Length: 275
Image 1 (spheres, helix red, strand yellow):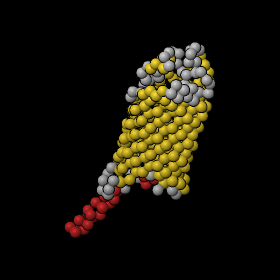
Image 2: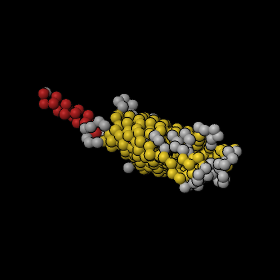
Image 3: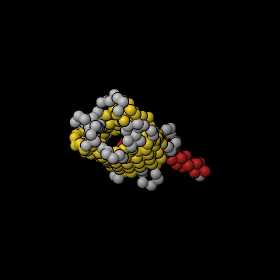
Image 4: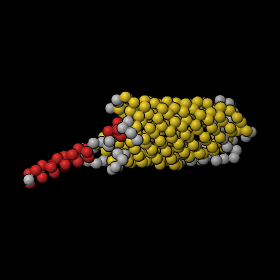
């Protein structure tokens, strides 16, 4: 009797260890361990906190590529290791409402805008008892840039390049809705560091101070057929560029970049391959 009791305890402990060693539930692990390609659209709203200032708004189209993994650190450990790398590109013509450099008169034109963003994440995921979900806390770092090219001579912003590094962290929650569908939501708080602007029309480079960014993303992953998945997401993000110190150019131009606010939101759909 005692030997049978010990045998049952060994089987139970082996089953518990096996469950703990698995990276989340199979559907969550498959959704977070994949490479993907998507296409999408983004709407940008830009505003300078200055009078007279510049405003821009409008949609752009683009694509994204990424890879992520959610794996056990080692058998018997509850935390799972989470890593991700994503690159997003978006370009198009958005409306510019600003002013001329010399006269200050209002100007209406088009910005042939190009946006680039790359972000890497690393963190730990913890299984949520009961619903099979996974709560992931992560650190994040990356880079973003905006090539601002106003197609009308003599206005502010004719040929400017905004850029900044990203550093911060966030939380991601994965929730299986069915044996094949996983929903996710993530929130991030990031700092914009080492940023600046290149004013190519004046051959000047100016540095920005640190500022903040916030980003919220909702996602769906559907295991369509085996390892092939359909993925969709929508996002909202907001950030400020802190501006630069005034500089004198060509003896009479007084040039500086004012504080600005940018809000972007959009969505995408694509395919993923779980490995």
